[in-house]
Image 1 (spheres, rainbow, N blue to C red):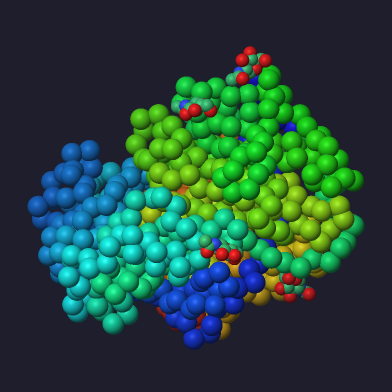
Image 2 (cartoon, rainbow, N blue to C red):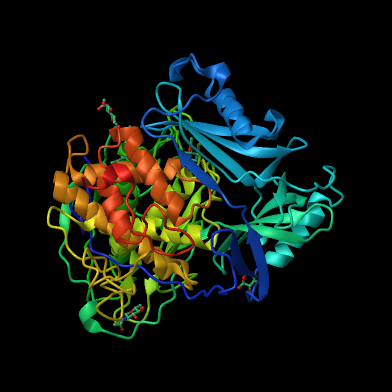
Length: 604
Ligand SMILES: *[C@@H]1O[C@H](CO)[C@@H](O)[C@H](O)[C@H]1NC(C)=O
Ligand SMILES: *[C@@H]1O[C@H](CO)[C@@H](O)[C@H](O)[C@H]1NC(C)=O
Ligand SMILES: *[C@@H]1O[C@H](CO)[C@@H](O)[C@H](O)[C@H]1NC(C)=O
Ligand SMILES: *[C@@H]1O[C@H](CO)[C@@H](O)[C@H](O)[C@H]1NC(C)=O
Ligand SMILES: *[C@@H]1O[C@H](CO)[C@@H](O)[C@H](O)[C@H]1NC(C)=O
């Protein structure tokens, strides 16, 4: 028997809540749907524009369409989905099949997904990717693509050595190569020229950065980056004794879900532990990946008491914090697993139990991490690499507050992990444009919000415990009332911060959640019918469908298609009603609100 003392009841974690806004400001001149300006280097003074070609998303309704005349006769069980996806995409985009390459595929709960990449002269193009989703009849239900018509391409034989490229990447990004083997990929520039690059991961623990550098293999300059870190927040919060968390503890016994975690939470391969060290999560105090203390309990009785009158590092407070972080991240693993974030769809586990996906990539949770303050961050690396969540102390309180006891912060970060792994097929590269980063922030707040809601939908203030005013760490509470939260699609116009922009998507999803629960009720059992169950299914299904670097419009369309795939479109008009209320009607574009419903949803 495993027992945890923690702040929350089991099953759907009922949460308290908090997270943070980023101090980073993006120049208003950037194109949010295709570009991202990164300030890199030790003092962040070097400006780098990352370019992501415009993507398309198209859904084909309930029946789907034939992938290709060649594949008309098959059901999914007998279809070579990879070959069919290549034929479909090549014909759809009028490109040769040689230029379309299957990168990976995944059986989701409501569709089969093939993830593809454009190739030039046999070399993959990092920012030109696609996905094709098949229904059980072997028909294409949707696809997305950011493939490009390039003008010219560099010679595929690099003239810069790996060592020189590593040196350039380390200098430019002020960090060190993490040892992950460099690759060769093309990067299409805004001009259409395909530059050959060496792809090198660069980490700096102190600065909290973890990049993938694309170093031009002919002129030895960093021309693009992937930023793997969902940013920490650095808020200045005045001392306020009233905000100290005084919520009560409850004791949770054997919370693990054995379908999601067959060997429980305390075994990694054949190693059984008596510590906060298992197949999904290792939680410890230390810094970065340097484990100085996992929590030990010989009989798995992790019943440490937090003394909120004392500093987080005093007495048994660290043990309680490690225990809570371990509990919440494992609980999220098991919860998300039920809704389709599994080994096959690129989740975080050491042992995948022969169920496909890359192994050795559990989450390392660094509690009371000493490299940062006032928030948390999560370096989400590609499938197969351990990803590090760092939970910092909020230092402007007395005593200080521990983000490891703020479940909404942990859930927000966990959702970044799921979003980043599921969208695009495990590359962790697909929320790099400003607009896509906003979508990801929105999903993370929306998950924290939704998991805090029961049957009675209430306004939700993100960061109530650690924020400075009645709106917590966000501009507005999430609310079905547009008087309380006036944000709409057009609010994005002129915004330059991904967290603020994310509030638009999070509030839209708050309203979708509320409408689904009003119509279908709430249940704690994910196998039963309930508005919350429908909501979580659509959310995880849409993550797999939406394009790499999705816009708000494409994310909306992925939800519509997700409902079509799983529920035969039963909730499509309910979804449209909520989207239209936020300006995301069928004709919405370029951050201009639109209030039109599709014809089938207009009441007669
Ligand atoms: C890592 O970042 C720190 C702080 O920003 C900086 O002082 C240090 O030089 C960086 N390390 C490398 C190897 O560049
Ligand atoms: C089991 O634990 C030991 C000691 O920590 C470690 O060296 C070994 O790699 C682990 N084995 C597996 C399969 O994880
Ligand atoms: C865990 O604790 C039990 C009970 O004290 C002990 O028998 C067992 O050897 C311990 N396991 C490890 C891996 O330390
Ligand atoms: C509350 O704080 C948030 C985040 O710091 C800020 O955006 C908002 O404007 C503040 N609201 C009020 C009413 O002061
Ligand atoms: C699915 O929806 C279509 C209309 O969009 C309807 O014709 C069909 O009967 C539905 N199928 C099932 C199984 O409910």
